[in-house]
Image 1 (cartoon, rainbow, N blue to C red):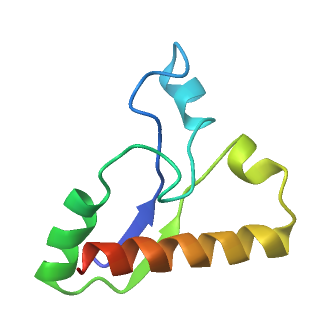
Image 2: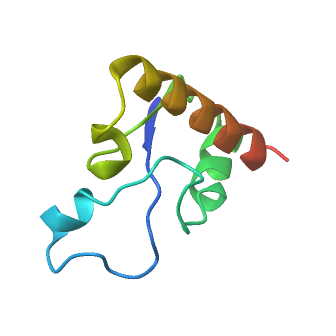
Image 3: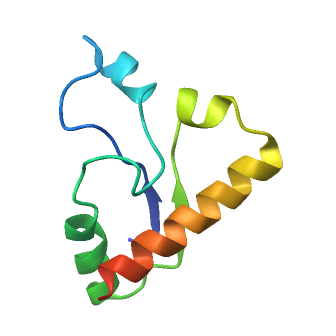
Amino acid sequence: MTGLQLADASLSPQSGTLFGEGRFRRFPGDGELDLDTVIRPLLDKGGLLTVGVEVFGDAIDALTTQDAGVRAAETVQTALARATR
């Protein structure tokens, strides 16, 4: 695996469908998921070349393109730093 797309979420269901759940994705670190358990083994394995966000819905829809890019970069950098501690 050379690429990773990150999103966070609530631990409790937010919608009655899988499609609906996708609309409640959050930026990494803004939810309740333990992203370190996903990120750390991939970093330890090596070969991870790209990491980005995969966020849909309210968390990103209201942002400008520039603000969404800045927010994505900041949250990915923070998630990667936290996973390497």
